[in-house]
Length: 342
Image 1 (cartoon, rainbow, N blue to C red):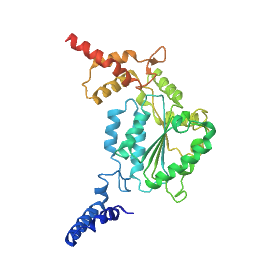
Image 2: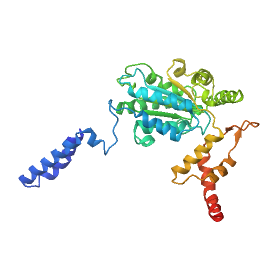
Image 3: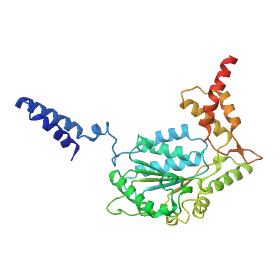
Image 4: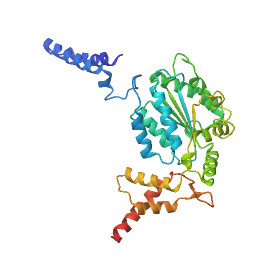
């Protein structure tokens, strides 16, 4: 039943007990209210609605958020910004947007997918139109791959039917059972519709640690040759990354038709983080907690971080992943000592 008539219907049982004049006033009030509710902008200010086709991503705001929250990832920023903004501007895409994010843990893959979700749907990962799948949680048993494939197809079909602009995030791809992800191949292909549903306006994001060693090697080679990391271009990494992931039995995309049929639009490399980037993470975390930046705390946390290679110690082996926990551990102690010294 449509929203407006449904509301009027709920009011009807009580109308029988009213005087004729009161009934007329009540019906008039209900009609006015349902009239307001018939406007999507009014209704959607109280209930989350799927964005209409006229909705456009604010690329300027997205860039600002990437600059403020994602550190040391010039390639990921530029590729994702152009890919997502361009996809959002296209009124008639020929296929869904598929991004595969690769790199070590703590380099920003989850953060980037979260930022994308927030700019497509204001509720971000809490949105009913953003769907997060964790390989070890949602698909734990190898002997049930066939069942998972069927469930995944039904889940995606149902959610895209409800909202064409749905976002699907698959985390821990390197832990996903081989072949499982091929179940979504029909939805990523260049079909106008599949079983009466168009998937062309949906976005699929895959997160994986697979290929991280290849990325780290390229970054290290640039450093050892005296080049700046900002000189690394997508063409230096994307071809070797796509081949490496395709041939990696632990990638979740091993011999996947998604790669074989060129259905993944961009393989996005996340570079290992240097000392300066980890410090930026620590400062950003302090600010997010409402604290002023305390460089003494920054140095204490940095002292506990570990770096590789063994000789040069250039890159954080955990990225920024342990920053929050280490900041929790040291904050009170350092601040107490600082006050005592003052």
